[in-house]
Image (cartoon, rainbow over all chains, first blue to last red; front, side):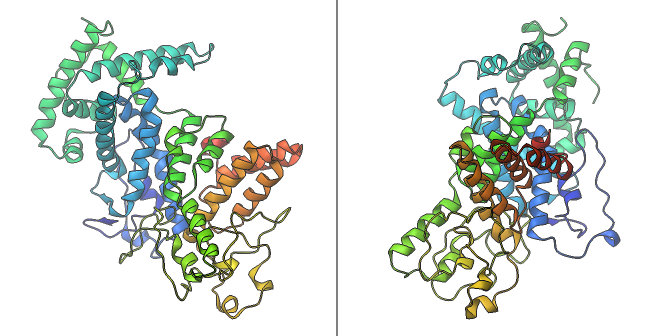
Length: 214
Length: 261
C-alpha cells in the first residue's frame, strides 16, 4: 500500500478506517507524529477489522442503492470485503480515504450482481418480502422505513447506473462534486450534469411510484 | 450542486437512506464470512460466529474454500506417503499473506492461503513452537501429522499436546521463541470453526477447549468471536458465573463489536 505526496504509515488504523461516514474531514497526518515501526501482522489485521466495522454500513447500503437485492446484499457485502482484503496492499489513498476505494469495488460487485440476477431471476421482488416478513410485530416503524427504502430503491433502479452513482454519492453519502469526480474518474462537469438529470429522474420515478410530490 | 431542488419527500427518503445498514447479526455474519474466506477457515467457522449472534449461516460463506482444510488434507496425504513430505511442507503449506514484496502487505493476516509444496529444510520463521496451551482437556488433533512433522511445525493442523520444550530436539532448541500473528491466524480461525462445530453437536466441553486454545495463540483477530463462543459454551456447561464473566470481558474488550451488543 502506498500513498502519494507523503509517506505516512498508512497502515495505521486511523488512516485505514478513514474519516467518519458523513464527515468530509480528512485524516491529518503529520509525519513527525507517525510511528516509525512497521505495523505487525496483527496490527494490520486489526486495521482491516476496523476498516470493516467502520465501512460495512457504507458498503451495504450502497450495494442496495445500486440495485443489489435484499436477499443478495449480505453475500455481496462479503464479496466486497474479500476483494478489499485481497487488494489491501494496493490501496492508494488519494485523499478521499477508503470510502472512495471501497465504492469502486462496490460498483463492480453491484454490476456483477445485477447481471447475475438478470440471467438467473429467482425471486421477483428480490427477497424484499422475505426481509419484511422477518420484521417482528413490534417493529412497525422499521417496517415502514424498510418499505419506503424499497420504493427509493425501485425509483433509483429506473436511473442509469452512472447517474445513480453520482446521485447516491452526493445525496446520501454527502460527497462533494470534486470528490465524486475523483471516485468515479469523470470530469467535474459530468458530475454536475449527471446530478441534475439524476435528481429530475428520481423525482419523476418517485411520483410514478406514489412516493414523491407531483 | 443545488439545482434542481429535491422535494421535501424525496429529501426525507434520502435522509432515511443515510442511516441504512445491516443489523448487528448481519454485520457479524458477513464478517465471519469474510474471515472464513480470507483467513483459510472453513465454512463452519463462519457459521460458528454467526450462531453466536443468533443469525443463520452466511450462504456465501459456505462457498468459501478453506485454506486450512486444504492444509489438513495435504498433511494427511503426507502421512500416507510415509513422510515423503517433510517438515518444510507444513511450514510452506499455508503461506499467509500475498506474494513477497518489498514492503509487508497491509494485512497479511488472513490473506488468501497459497499451497506451496516445498521439500527440504523448514523455514526458521515458521518452524517454531507455539506458546504453551492450557487446556481443560488435551486438544483433539484434526488429522494425524506425518512422523517427520514436528508438532510445532504444523501451523494450522494440530495443536501440540505439550509444549515443544518437553520434547527436546535440536530444531526445537534453535527455534525462535514465538510464532507471529500472521502465522497463527489460520490456526485461530480453524479452532474457532472447531469450537462452533462442537457447539452444534452439543459438545460444549470440546468447544470450550478449542476456543481457549485459540485464545492462547498470538493472533487475536477473532477475539470477539472467541469470547462469545466461550460464553456460549460455559453457559451450556451450566457455568453461568463464568459465562457472565466471559460476556463482561467481551463487552469490555470489544465494545464496538456487534457480538457485544
